Length: 191
Image (cartoon, rainbow, N blue to C red; front, side, top):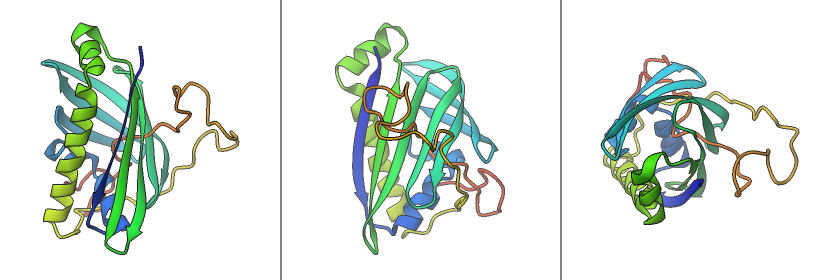
């Protein structure tokens, strides 16, 4: 049984600031509930340690598509199975809509029950609210950003998107994006 969540939030910062901050994966524990740590391996690979329902897990993820100020997509490459995309939409010079879509396979009875009662949606919504508070509290000053472009591997795929991404047909996304921090090193920034 696949679980799908899609949530959006409007943040009062320019699209560039919201996008740049999201590319700082190693800072995700500052606003994502259950994320213990994220290690940036290289521009397109991360290693995650999370805690879900009291259980600790580790997995690797790959950025499958990334376009500055537009989107970051990812999928897991080992461990917990999931994929997602984060998109950034300019609403005004100082306002951006951030939308997260995640698809994953809940593991175990507790996670499956949580998916049924909407715990996943509440968690993602809470993460977005904490991201909004974090970036707005900084006055829209991101801690770093990676402006590289990662083309979708199946860029020749037409309408409907690639197969195997669930019922939404959306491209997978990652909770961040091959982030270069303010030091110019992958993942060296923080939220």
